[in-house]
Amino acid sequence: MPLTETTKIIENGIVATGDNQNRVGPYAVLIRNDRIVDVAQRSEPLKNQYPNAEVIDAKGMVLLPGFVDAHYHGESFLLRHIVGTTPMARWERDRRFTAAYTFLNRDAAREDLESLYRIAYFNALKAGITCIADFGLDNLDFSPTVSFEAMKRAELKGFIGLHNGDQIEKSRQLQSPSIRFAVTISGEDELTTYSLQTALRSADELKVPLMVQLGETRRAFETVKRNFRRTTVQLLNEYKIFDLRVQLSHLSLFEGDDAYVLAAARTPLIVSPHSALLKEVDIPPLGDLLARGVPIALGTDWGALDPFLAIRSLVAIVRNQNRPIPGAYELLAMCTKNGARALGFQDEMGTIEPGKKADITFVDIADTRRGFALSTTQSANLLNAVLLECSSRDVSDVMINGNFYVRKGTLLTYSEEDLLAAGNRLLTKLAVQAQQRETPGTTEPPGQRTPILSFESGQAENEAEESTEEGFRIIRKDQEEEEQPDKVIPLRAEPPKPVEVPKTIRRVFGEDDV
Image 1 (tube, rainbow, N blue to C red):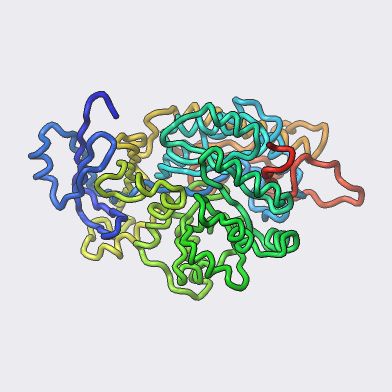
Image 2: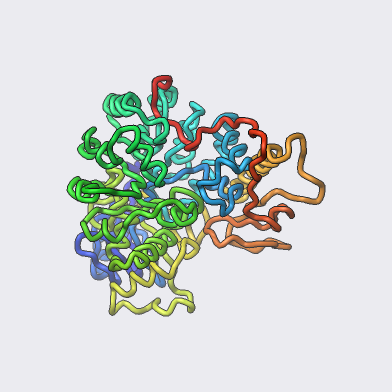
């Protein structure tokens, strides 16, 4: 609660409340301190009642509830530049990726992870995301601490995954009403009855949710069936995990009554459609799950943060499955209300309605390339156009707890120049690690440069290539990588030198962890 009460009135914008009434129209929003007090038809009565209120003109803007990214891997914000478009099934054999990942997960210094998480979370903020759940790195004990501090610095709300006993002990010292922790269950190769029981016991002791990441690939699905004689859904149901607080990600494959069990549980399933396409992993039967009433929440999982891109990818997948396309209100719920519910924040966020926190994303639709800027007669059509035609580059302003942290596309609380400088230093270090692994004993040849990050705003001189992903773009690239962007080191006759990265690139609770 602020020392001095503040009152704000947002007028002239088109508001999509995302609540049970699914209102879309030229409403005025009254905010007292950090919460929404009223969503009114007109602003004049509010201004008469609160003559000293700050009036915010949102002309040309669509106001959406702050986006909720229900599943993310913060390290992927930079690692995506190392792995490129290589499918996930080949990551183990890509020595560049395994070297960079091993460095982040085992050898990175605290300042390295500080740079990593800050640049990821501030980019999430610029994309209109006000709440995020980060799976986290599973080895270094200070990883959750650094993630927590970076999330708090960006003013985001969310969850951070805990993977072992050391991380749990570190988390006990961290307190925030808006940033919480969850105990992870993942990695089908290492999953055992003991590790499941340990995770359940740890979550119960800490009074935190479970962050379950299982069933992303056919191989993972078959591993559970082979080891437990049950499907993934059957295993989770047997351990009564659906009765607990759980953040359920992936689950791409189903057999028998699995879909009915999930539908009956009413547990939101967190899916990452764009990441699934990018990584070329198994695609969940989204059309069938939606038809059965399974609540779907959206996450990024891997790569650039852009909720609009996730929405469009989901629509493309459902269309390809020959199932009905979700309507505009349902699509909005997937990246707002359903995400808040999946994380247990449904009482605080996910909609623009009285009593909720004032977390609002402003989307600029005044550009003449948008043919729907002033059309409010068909609210569903307007919302559908915004969700399917805009991108995070159209996010102009972001408000959290009634305060602006992004205005006119610019961060207000952190220097973008400093973020870029720190991110570039770490990306250069990762590129060197990857190159040394690829050709031991070598350094970067003269005249060749590692990838350089840049905010999408402004143009760089001599720009060689622009990424289509949101947030940052590569503006200079290693010459060899330009010629072979997806190069993977071929397997040799002799076994390669072992890399200290598990096959699943994940670690779960086990006998040596707690």
